[in-house]
Amino acid sequence: MEKLVSKGEFLAADQLRKEFQVEASFYQTNIGKKKYQCRNHAVIMRKGFTRNDQADAVILMANPGSCSPSDRSYEFPTVQGIVKSIPYISVNDDPTQRQLMRLMKLLDWNVISIVNLSDFCSGSMKKFGENLKQAEKYNFDNHTIFAEDRVKELELLLSGPKTKLILAWGKNTNIRKLANKVLCNLPVEKILYGLRYKSPKWGFRHPYPMIPDKCKAWLEDMDEQLNDTDTNNRAY
Image (cartoon, one colour):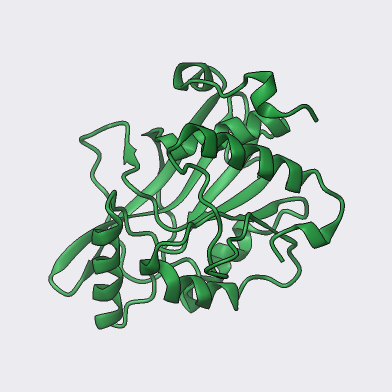
């Protein structure tokens, strides 16, 4: 496939929105005396497709960042325990989601799912790290889809026989413990994709490193890996 940069297809937001839309399910949960806003799942769809169509890939990142509902008055349902039956709503797409739309366009994909090491919504990795410490303090595991109580939720998302699993959670030290735990519990039947750092070994390049040339490089490298028939050139 011709290189993305030479094709000049680093599409702008308004062009991407003509082809793709994003929905997500949000909730809030109580830990100690505080409420925490969370997102357990987001779906990027080519227009004309739905979230019920089989996903071409599941992208696993660190946290939902500052992703927010399109309707600012939306009230997050409160969930304690198992996360289920949460409504999906339209969201304001963010730079990372738009980068994933570019990958979808490059690969002719129609639907991708986005899940995270943790559901905690936070635009600041420092604040996110504090949330993780608070959850650990109260022995609260259900903020992650990899919690024992949420096994069925994870299995459903990964159930598509052709659905690829792409690791892309970066290398911020706040996620080191959780990332290592997840790496030991990923489904053995899935071939893993992702651009692994030489150091730390638990880190995988994030889709949107902000610098334009690095964003283009991520797209090109992922495109090459996903089209490579040699399994030795994948995440493991």
